Image 1 (spheres, helix red, strand yellow):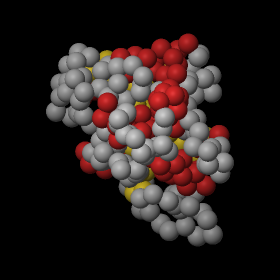
Image 2 (cartoon, one colour; image 1 turned 90 degrees about the vertical axis):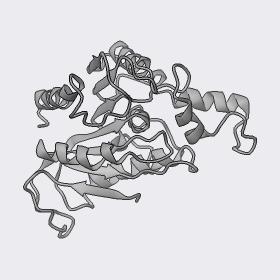
Image 3 (spheres, helix red, strand yellow; image 1 turned 45 degrees about the vertical axis):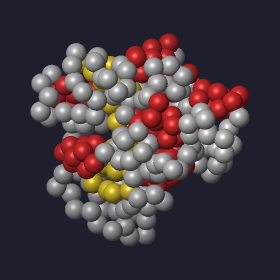
Image 4 (cartoon, one colour; image 1 turned 180 degrees about the vertical axis):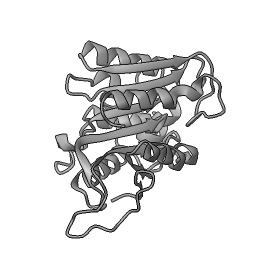
Length: 261
């Protein structure tokens, strides 16, 4: 089990599980995946986000998933293992059945999207429907590995194209890039999503969020997208950025409309 920190709802004391059952009330849970281009983990997209979600009455779980030099599928294996752990209750909290979401920023958003679209890892124990989240929240996400790409995320997750020792011949590499492009793998069973991006994001083009939104819409999956005119990449909660700072209240309203907050 990769390093996962638990943040129960505000005002709730975490009590160790007894016979597999905790003393917390049933509540939704959110798995948080910070960004960092698959090279590291952005702290401001981790614990502060967990505290915000806990203030809405949800259990928050921050996952420190594997990054470079680890390659695909290790980060996805970590995320699926965390989903399984959250759903089975080994943490001692009572999580509402059918209300486990994922929230990811940037490359963490890519990991959240590949988790949501059921990308296989060839681990039969983890490649199960229960490890697909019920909702996804994607913040300036990397989505595509084939168009409008963030090359750093590709290099860190699957290796640079010029690598000769990563085991990927060109046709195999192209197939893998297609598999890891979430907009190409959306289906009617992909969970509903909330996305936000800034139009002038210079690191991860807004076309990533537009592509995923379009794919969800074509598949008949509910989606809410907010594109703000200005804002740098990596804003996190964006509390000091006019306009963009409202994304948390918009997301909270979306969650409330679904009965999650």
